[in-house]
Image 1 (cartoon, rainbow, N blue to C red):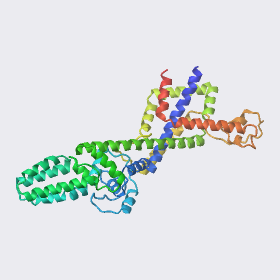
Image 2 (image 1 turned 180 degrees about the vertical axis):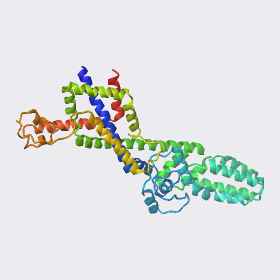
Image 3 (image 1 turned 90 degrees about the vertical axis):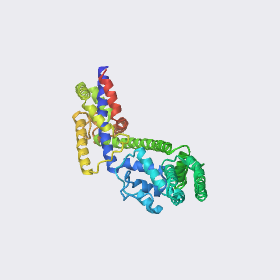
Length: 414
């Protein structure tokens, strides 16, 4: 029973080290290709399917998703130019705070509509004689524009406007605003400023989506909360999509490592079972590494880069330093695997002078044995066993270091 536990513990320890190596290589590839940022842009392209709005949001100083000069919210730009900017070189931005995204989108969408929808109303009020009446109406309109509240009070206040010309002109302007809202397919509410902004969105899909969000909100604060919820759902999908990509990448990286280094689960497990001294040595090393906390530190260091976004943390632009640092870490991980003295690695030894039934003809680490002409009696079984052993290693390594570290802790604490 103890031998079985030692074999399992040794294999789990190997998988932890291999998983750490796989995760570090994944992190290097992710940084080199800016996979997180590209995944974020792909998600936002689905959320904002209007290229003009995309370009203005992506270049906004608070976002800076792409490398381009910022566009003002009211700047005129063709859809082709906007698409070229939105699809341009990408910055190392892998996360956007929901509050920031909502602020940027709303300020961009509302920039034109405030003047177009409320401009006539403001001009009428500004044309009134100076005095408390004009100041009061101006404050009420500003409140409607900035907060979405106060429309009912503004309508009621018209009865107190002494000059009928201004009273009727203001009422007509408010009716025109109602018409703007009805064209979007919504009913006027206290959230009129937000609703008017929806008419500025060219994309029917995005306009309908935003309109549905705005229609269910009674104020600007409610609108922001709804938009943040909508954005968080999109980011959850982005995180799940990224995790799926990283899982596939882990399988590919693990396969390359397992083939290059010849990490064969079946052969290693058999070697540990047949060699008590080596088994005890690895078990002792695993116990020390786990109990000392060294392995926990290594696992925690790579866990954050496994399958989640980092909150508003841009990746380092010092690519050379990153590559050098990661390269040193990878060399250390490979050395850790080598120090285990496990039967890994390839050889190519001509053993044609050895009898066909000799054990050396069935050595799975000798590539010479896999050629049918060299080993007609044993190459098929060797190849099948190697495929199964490598496949088991790849699947195990793709589970991640935290998974195997948890199992290692349970085995050691028995």
